[in-house]
Image 1 (tube, helix red, strand yellow):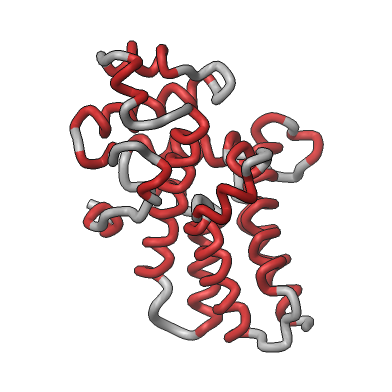
Image 2: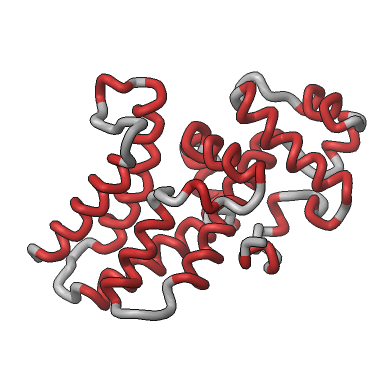
Amino acid sequence: MDLVDRFQIPVLEAIALRNPQATQLGQRIIEGSIFLIDELGFEQFTFKKLAQSVGTTEASVYRYFASKQKLLLYLINWYWGRLECRLLLQTQGGSVRERLEKALELVLLSKATSLSFSSEKRLQHIVIHEAPKVFLTKAVDTDHQTGYHSIYTEIVRYISDLVRAYQPACKYPEMLVSTLLEGSLQQRFFSQHLPEVTNASEQEDAVAVFYSQLFFSYLDHE
């Protein structure tokens, strides 16, 4: 078992009307939604289809989530929450450089085979394809004030603090880290759908190699 699975992943309670991790139906709703969103895409995903796939009613799904946007927000936060837990567990020992290297290995998705449960690979696909949809909305400022994006910002802050410890002269640590996170996800999307605009390949993890080299080249020349 992945050590992460021993912890309750901190997903903001306000996102869901009822904690889906606390009931068997809620867990089925989460598992079913991960499968369907990965298979169908967020636009074609509906609560009606989800209810049919997990053997419940549409009304029961609405008891957990007010909308499919809130469900997507929950899933994205759950993914980042598991990643944050791994960061905190696996970057405690060694030099600052070694801790940064481990952090990059985790956030650049370069250890996909270590994902601890079958749906997590699908959840990773959802983050690559759908995560921008929880930011690029008219409600983003309200969502941010409510704390809906707090896990993501905590990850950026944690790695940025490691950057400051490694290279105190770095002027733009948060910008560097958020560019790393978003750019690597976009390149993975390009590698699957627009291969002409990226050098990523299936044979090697060029995304992780490129961003690791870019990251430390920038810091070491500050």
